[in-house]
Length: 111
Length: 113
Image (cartoon, rainbow over all chains, first blue to last red; front, side):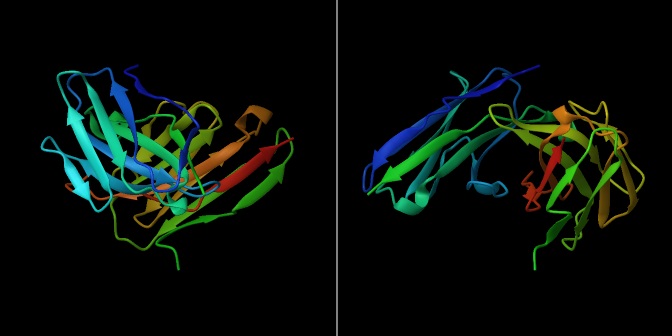
């Protein structure tokens, strides 16, 4: 099965810092990419889609590098409320079964 | 109220018992999914449905069955629960032709003793 890999962390980052993490995927035919956020014991929620041209939403920037087969998420001016697990999701095609979730990167913002 | 509702939210049962997890949605989406999440393993797809009475196996369907008798409802059954089915179960919906975004329910935590 085609894999989606993430560094599980935890990333311990001081409040106000910038943090970035990557997600690699193995299927070069992957079609669409997403970052989801999951708080402890809660359901995942879409943070942002990742477009070929990159995507920025406030303090969050997502990038896609097709040549190297990874996507990235950059968080600027991190807040305590950014503490969560960030899930990388890759649609490798083939309907619902094409959605592959990474295991998540755990981020802890420290005061 | 949540757009995707799962019941029960928590359940403890014994090995061999039949368990049903229910999912209902008010989003009007045609596609529905069941995932399980285990520590260190991430989210894995159990079954999915693109329409009423359409059923498709996911990555880990063994030991599970589903029913989609109405667009708004998708139920997951464990015919004879076993301890390694202890997990957090999520129902999700999406709309065909949409962005691919999944909308998750709040999860059902199942413990099989």
